Amino acid sequence: MQDFLKQLPKAELHLHIEGTLEPELMMALAERNGVTLPYASVEEVRRAYDFADLSAFLELYFLGMSVLRHEADFEDLAMDYLRRAHAEGVVHVEMHVDPQAHLARGVPLETVLNGLERARERAARELDISTALILAFLRDKPVEEAMQLLEAVEPYRERFAAVGLDSAELGHPPGRFAEVFQCARQMGLACVAHAGEEGPPAYIREALEQLQVCRVDHGVRCLEDPGLVETLRERGIVLTVCPLSNVSLKVVERLAEHPLPRLLEAGLRLTLSSDDPAYFGGGMLDNFAACREAFGWGEATFRQLAANAIDEAFMTEARRSELQ
Ligand code: ADE
Ligand code: ZN
Image 1 (cartoon, rainbow, N blue to C red):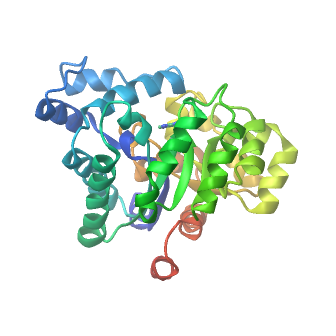
Image 2: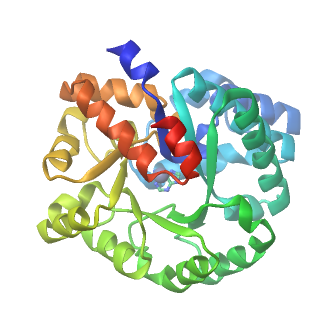
């Protein structure tokens, strides 16, 4: 089964590139850039990864990314991850990036975007991995900041496939960003948003109605609202579910209690992703293998989940037919 899961061509639709920063690279970049971290060793970094919830994780996530300063750091970060993904049978990766978090530390937009662009070109050439970039807005920051970011990104418009919404969910409903997402649509960008990870089903509904998202990141709490489940199913909206992330952030206590089997039974379109693989205990293959272990799914289920991701990916039709 492990061989089957490894060779299955997998598309990763829900990934934060800053969440792929492994402790080894974090320490190496801290040294290279003279950044002081509150950790003495790689082991100490790993020991800190015991999160009570999303907010507790985000604190370490923003701290970890403070080692990223130069274009080469962003290139190394992404290449490091893409090589690991390639070894796990990943053929396409859609990366959320959080420019606001870097701008706030004085790292210019072009540094972030040019570093990632170099990695994307190399991944296509050296690994035959296609990639798409998702401009994520931090939902716990002012709406005006998101709008300014969208304007700043105009010269780089062609590098992006979509906009997304991430960071601390509770108390930050998606509807606030309706105008930003409307402008993004006018620029021809697709819309996705995190909703229903920690937040209530009402946030998923808001993301659908006010942000007009074509995919919901996480969305696992939709089951609390049968009417919403019906809407998601009717519209064929994909939920990008991240099993190991949900365990790490205590959305569920154990994977065996994860709503994934019930989401499938409800007839929803699902994909599996790793979210922040360096922080949550593994990449795509580990997430697939953990689901096999917890739910005993057979090959047909994994084939369907992997096919859903390729069907829903932001990629050219030529690339899609190559992968189908
Ligand atoms: N940013 C990085 N990982 C995230 C997650 N799991 N939820 C919300 N925002 C995030
Ligand atoms: Zn996420």
